[in-house]
Image 1 (spheres, rainbow, N blue to C red):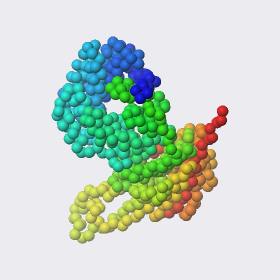
Image 2: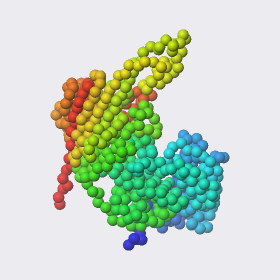
Image 3: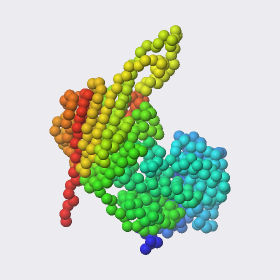
Image 4: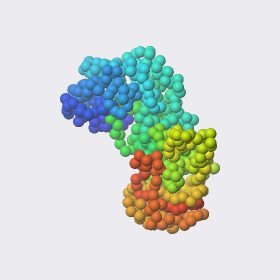
Length: 573
């Protein structure tokens, strides 16, 4: 029946809320010292949702109300005279305050619908929300997703406290256009911000404004995300422009969006993703409030659709290819922003990982290539071309210069030339005005995706420089066939190596097609990862952690690498 409730899901959402709310309700008068304004608002919303839900242990609990009241006092104390909230590294931040206001307004709806027993809580929430109105109405942002979080807060304020100025401001922001590309990726390409900010905000705005185009943006993003879900239940982040680009991101935060749209559209692929997102359990304490505010979430999911394998997806805008078969999943990436911007910066896609391979429990988390070339850092493809359905070519040319003397008309008697950045470093040498002698290094990586892995051909052309290919395997398995060189590192020269973990196995075999013999285990100066001077000049690194196998030598070089995945046959009973 289409309106049948999914009682197991609702109970799971209530248990997740209770894990946060029950301890708070047991100490209702305890002041929440050191808790951020965003966490305070989430606690209040969760306590009220638990009070409202018949599936919660706190249903109708006066202690839940008392704890919510205590937290509202702390939240009001964190509010400055501008209406914005204090705390965090973003000072007087409208978007950071918007995150809190969104929870405050949802809590206000839940409290107002509960009747007179929550009148004092409702009034306190209204006072906090009302005090933010003018600051959010005129405030600015500093990241793309902030626009939609701020718009959602304005729309929620209007929902509870109607004011056409709020909707006019929302329409002003939306007139810029939603930052989603033809592939369904938001401009920040971040799973974290898609799941936590852009998608939920646009869903709310679509509902309040009746904007089908905003709903369509979310559907497009979720459709593309289907091809970014790995067999380990994480969403691919290597192409992200935000903080999540260096760490796995779980599918779980996508649960309410896949679930809601599966129910409303009947899409079996969204239903499959919703079930996968909940496979590890429901842990989001805010989900109970969502079930009360959006009852459709509580309905039974449509039948999930089986994923058709093998499947290949190439995202042209992110320059990312993913090939999935019953044996392996391989991801190839060549969409870094660093070659164009020539810097490491928050907001740029900087991850130098260009390949991942999944084989059950055996996971090759990262393949990276270092070159000892003017300390300019590891290989990050400036271009990625799709040669055939399963073949891709990644290329990058790095250049550095030696500078000649000034022409006579540009010389200064005092030697005080302007400070300039030449791409590697800065100095008082007015580099742009000098003749230059270029030194270049070109790296090409051709990847042929297979049902059981990939074949790589790595070509390094230019002066004789050291290079090292780093293969980082997820910890927990065993390396066989490579020579240990200490600190979780191995060297591979001749012969194959194998990495085994659980039901999976990844076999690696390297061969020199052109160039000197590979470096042996005694060449620690070569067999290492170098993050480049943008990191080392400030004592930082973006190095991976795990079991690292190195293949290295001195270029020019042409190396072939065969990566083969195997899965253990399921046991028969």
